Length: 163
Image 1 (cartoon, rainbow, N blue to C red):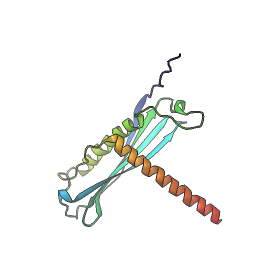
Image 2: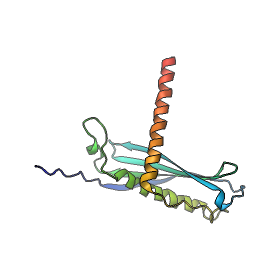
Image 3: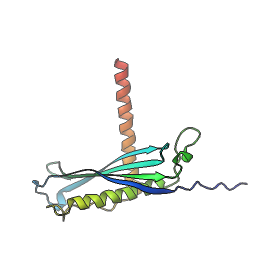
Image 4: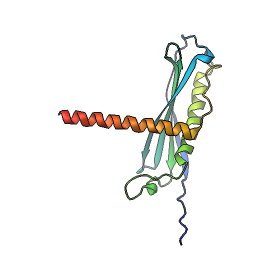
């Protein structure tokens, strides 16, 4: 019986880009009254061998629900022969844990750049992006992306039907 080896998933960081940041320093915020939320845009291009993770974090003051800090950072990974992971049904079959690993790296970039942007502000000692379970957070954000894409497709289909 032939031993089939898993295709090597070679990658490099191609780009790190600060895609957005704002801070509202007028708000008085207590450290134990902060809610942290995350977002992710996940794109890939098999023709050009890249995967993008645009990871965001927002910090809200709980009682007012006002976002007082927001940051977003895009990390683009070059993936050697990304098209080689496409199966016969045109689906990309990523090796186990590869997407979560790249997400973890991209999340760390977001944490570092957001920390740099907050440094020197009145929130620099109370805003901390906590350590996360990258597998859990990635899969939660991926599921949200899938649901949003389905909603957008349904809305598009409804608009086409109305024409």
